[in-house]
Image 1 (cartoon, each protein chain N blue to C red):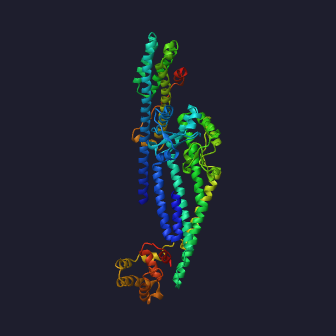
Image 2: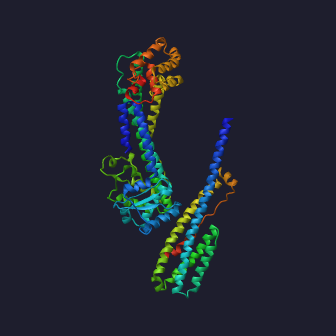
Image 3: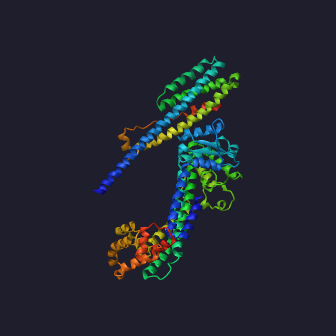
Amino acid sequence: MIIAGIIILLLLIYSVIQYNAIVQAKVRVDSAWSQIDVQLQRRMDLIGNLVETVKGYANHEKSTLEAVVNARAKAISSTSPAESAGNQNILNQALGKLLMVSEAYPDLKASDSFLNLQSELSNSEGRVAYARNYYNESVQIYNTKITSFPTNLYAKMQKAAEREFFIPDEAARTVPKVQF
Amino acid sequence: MYAIMLQLGYIVALIAGYQVGLGAIIFVSVIALIIDAYSYWQCDKIVVRITGAQVVSPSEAPELHNIVEELCIASGLPKPKIAIVDDPSLNAFATGRDPHHALVAVNTGLMEELDKEELRGVLAHELAHIYNRDIFVNSVAAVCVRIVSAIANGFIFAGIAALTAPSAPGRKTKEQQDAENSQRAMGLGLLLIGALLAITFVPALAVLQFAISRTRESMADLTGVKFTKDPEALASALRKITGSNVPTYTRAGGTAHMWIAKPRFIGGGLGNWMSSLTSSHPDPVERIATIDAVARGQSVDLALSKQTQSSATIGFAGLLATVLVVVPGYWVGTNPLGIGDYSGGYSTDSGYDDGTGGGGSDGTYDDGYDDSYDGYYEEEVNPDADGGLGDGSTSTEEEVPADDATGGIGEGSTDDSGDVVSEEPDASGGIG
């Protein structure tokens, strides 16, 4: 009788711990995603400033500038990790083109604000990459937890669903980096 | 500082007899634990004071702050305080009781000699220490070793004290002689236990402590690489750090495990002579090899070395042997802990307490004595039963100034359990 009680008690404690571990892993994924959001937001601001700066020197590169502006708007409005990653790739390609075009404008290339923005943008690239690593690791821990036995039983109790990884297109991502 | 206090406790144990000494050792050990807890709690501030590190703001060291911010994003840690130590040697450390009170410090030499990627590798290693809670792990390991060695030393000193305690003066009854012999036997037992612990378990624990420190160091390398995804940078930083011929000197040996590279101790001596068994850091060549293996995608094994395993085995065998000595010794009647024989029998007697409570005048004392001990004497010490009353009363009359130290067996032991042990005669009389 007592032994049965102890076993039930231990099972209860184990369940609470496992249940909370899943909650914790989920919170970590959410906070990692918001960290990506923060870093992407900073990058969007920098790109907006870059567009304004380039406009001042090379206003007739309208199509290139517009491509960046549109891609940026789309990237900001994206909601899911997969959508965001795809839109970021489009933005990166447009940005790469813009920076290539800027090569033809010596005044622009020599301006302080442009150089400053370029270095900040490269810095921001790094931070987005770090935030992405952390997010993907968090997702991996979380997904493993909610799909493996017996923790998947507790995941079902709180209707925990698998999360998406944030996977950028490597080739597209490196384009702006080459420029710096 | 409390090492000195502990030694004082042992000396008190030698002079004042083992019971007072044990009390002193326990008291000092508790104070030492409190100091340990306090220095762990305040370790970021204390270490900054010891090393002379200067906390820097983002405007003072923008590059350093930038790297640490990136790594915090990569690790999910809150941003620690950042400090610079004005020291030409290539070294860095992390401290703080938890991630919210962490501090990362870098020597000026490191900032000059390493490029940005290498510096990032080193800072990631330091943040990994915070991430893995290594400051806590190392503190707990150190405290465990200190407690066990204090216990072992306490046994040894208490044993010596019991063996060398002066025997009660004057004529002795058979019971007194027996009790004194039993005290000597107990002293020998304590000494044996202490010595066994001191030569086996304590060194083994110390070796384990260093092994833990080394393992956490390698773990921090790998965790750091996980943050940066750049094992080559850390390997090349470690190569530069190892190749540097400017050693870090530290005044505080206890902080050795925090640095990325093993510091040397001011004044040289034992600290610099440490073998691989008692090193706070793994061999740098092995560390670099491990990181390179990770860079190639191989899995690595951070198991304890053969030496560490065997010394730990010896240590636990010693502990087992100690237990095997204590338990039969206790049952056979050596009674190494000196409890349960005399004081146990009397202290359960509640009548005596009433007697001493009002025991100012001889009359009440005698009354209490009579009431409570009649039954006991009849049962246990039959020959004394008739004269018990007389003996008891005469001895109290005679030897009140001597604090009853050499009274009958009954009296001596009841004193022990009734009064708090405070003086030398009492201590030896308690057993006799």
